[in-house]
Amino acid sequence: MMKKIIIYSLFLNLIALGSLFSQVRNFEENISKRGTTAAAFLEIGVGARALALGGAFTALADDPSAVYWNIAGIAKLKRSGVIFNHSEWIGNTSFDYFAGAFQMGRMGALAVSITSLSMDEMEVTTVDQPDGTGQFFRAGDYAVSLGYALRLTDRFSIGFNPKFIHQFIWEMSATGFGIDIGVHYDTPFKGIKLGFSMTNFGGDLKMTGDNTRVLFDLQPGSTGNNERVPANLETDPWQLPLNFKIGLLYDAFQTDRHQARLILDAQHPNNDYESLNVGVEYIYNKLFSLRGGYKSMFLQDSEESLTLGAGLNYQLLGNVVFRFDYAYMDFGLLENVQKFSIGIDF
Image (tube, rainbow, N blue to C red):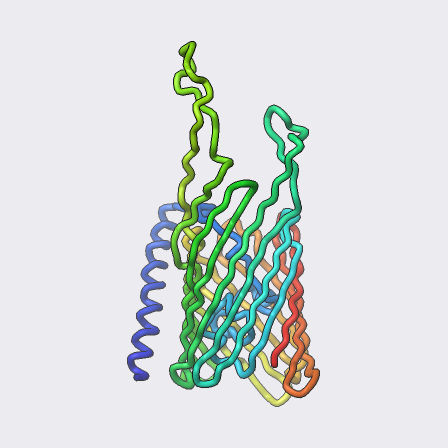
């Protein structure tokens, strides 16, 4: 059984490596696919702890935010837990994320998550009416997922996270489905863990709705014809932001009061070049943590870079633990984003 598990894990990694090599060829030919996918809100990282580590969380994935980073991680959580994170995002938008992971003993673990990106109402303007038409519109995105993970052995976990995705703007909307697949492996080598995740694998999204309806003149040079023929503009389908990640974790040292670890993530998205995320974490007495990282290393023209953060774990009653985490992320020309997340383990 263990041999079959290892072979399966290697097979998943070979798929990712094969995709990576094709992307390297695109890089050599200077072919970029930036901005060619839909549902970009699915790429916004969640959980202040993971973000303070530069997004290097695939091989760690040991809190409820694993639902986003590596669904296999929820199978090895010792307790059930929930996490909530709110932030004022770029462009006067609001980003919210909720996830819960619930242990079922030998039956594995279940998880649920809700992701939302929203904005305030804006007034409709046109070329003829630049000051506004008197109409208002809204835009937003959300996704709901229901995941499951199982420990196949004491070292190997696998998980699946199907999700429903919806985007809308004014009277247009798009709906689709995707799935995340994750693997986590605690290697026989002391202090070394591996993780693999494939996120947002699914069908295309295509905007449909009343805003594509127009009145068209089939023969503008003719007279006496109908100049207001009802027509419908055709929209193209767009892929989901598929991403392959391979993570490595190394526990540098661990004593009764002190713990330090180094985490690396190599990622291969379908809408950009490859990059590397790096993070370090120091934990004192399982109570207070300091974190730092660097996101999107080796990625040209990236606005993401340095990340910093801290965390506090406080035991309330019995086995109930309250977690508060903070992250600072440098976004270059877009200045910075600060995120807070609150979690409860029970």
